[in-house]
Amino acid sequence: MPDGKYVKLTALTLGVAVLNIALFSPGMIGIRIGQHPLSSAVGVTVLCGSVLALAYGSYTLLFAPRAAAGAVKQIRTQEELVEAWSRYKRVRALSGYVDTGLGQWERFRKKKDALLDALKQRFDLAGLSYRKFAAVILEAEKLFELNFKSMLGRLQTFDEKEFESVTAKRGPALPQGLLQERANVYNEYLSFTESSLAANEELLLKLDKLLLELSRLDSLELSDIENMPGMRELDTLIRQTPHYRK
Image (tube, rainbow, N blue to C red; front, side, top):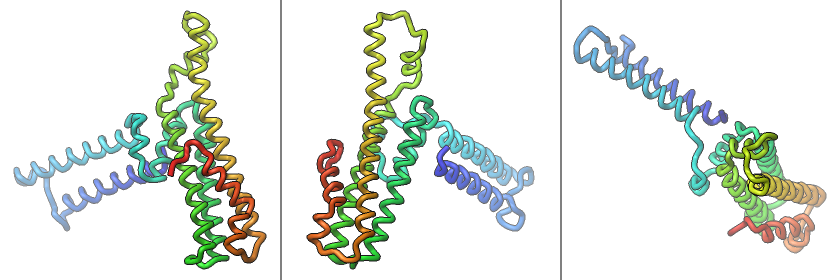
């Protein structure tokens, strides 16, 4: 379970506990079961509601089914995107790809922070030089995020049991040509994911080059920034990637 779900489950448990303490503590509201009919009814209702809230909350956080493929468009934050990706670590055929992708996401976050920190140390935040660098970095972030959403759409339609039946040594008694076509479909899933992860790796490499070039220079004019190899390569990659849309 992703860390965000642990936090939510802990918050739910603490909230229910605090509510019950406040309602049943003698020094506070002091509801007593068995003392008065109304007090007993309220107390029993609160206890039953607490149990139901914990049961429903635990089920929703721990065992709720995965979102449908259309839910990719509903993802609004990077945290939601990472959480959606993390669900597929439980799929054996995809776990290696998911681990690689999540590792790339963390590396991108660190490189982005390092680049922005380096820019803040060298340029005026209101100057054209800073804005030129920052704009390219933010465009790279958009590309990275859209690439992850594109891969997530494939992950959400991946049928693990179907894949296992296709790759099983003793498959169903079907014509060989049909079995091969089924295998080709799932090989395409994996090939797409591999190529997308490779594209992410290329983007990370170009960010490394840009950071290295930036660290070598003490001062830059705007024209120098536009002609830096790292900036040109990164800008070209962003504009040529088919998944990228402004």
